[in-house]
Length: 361
Image (tube, rainbow, N blue to C red; front, side):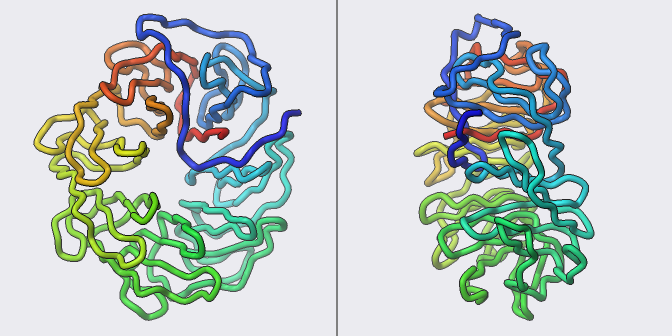
């Protein structure tokens, strides 16, 4: 079985074909050196071949790659770190060998896990739970990456759920519905030193929930149900300094719909969810300047809001419940040009929804 390399959480790449070339691949592609897209969802077949909830796809051809494995992934974006996949299903955190699917350990939370972040030593989880493996852990916990043993509480006193986590060095950023941590006010956003356990002074303050967090260089981007950050208008997406928490000029000006997920290029953010942004109508997808938030011309039209979006090398790849993209049949997976949003010929076919995608880099 081939060796799996280190993986990032949501970025993906592929080369496209002409938009008119709707080739359907039904064979399995075996070249070990080719990059892979790992796809998770409710499907039972991919390209007409049995693949139950998980498939490996070649990024250039869309062909299946690798043998069949089964991973039942729930509410949290799965994380592939080295040779282990960390994922949630039914309130249980799993660590499974990615090549064989063998479960290495499990940790049971009392309710849903919404977010997972992994580093060399630790798996951090956030959600709506109150206990983890029977130990009191309200909304946030950490476990040993190698064994799943529940570690001492890093930070406590959370009064509501943690929906999003993002790690940058020794700083863990939290987003969600909470208003206090350790008795201190933190309106839905906070940062913790993972070595000392100290709550940082970083405190942007959102007036509505935070659903996703992304650390890109020295900037923290986040999406959610807010309308202001630190008293300044920022509808559904905002950017703050990762060190100080100061609000940055970035302002995408979403006035219809909302931002849910993001994918990043060097100068652009691709966003799912918005209906009106920068004064222009968009059909659930938009692209904005990463510094200013100014709207780009990129405007693909999916049948429904994608549940995953990834970018690499000038291409944007999406999965979801849609069956058309730009008015052309695309069964739950599609790729478009990162500049104009033109449909590409990359065309794997799932028989049901795709919930998550991650990239072999």
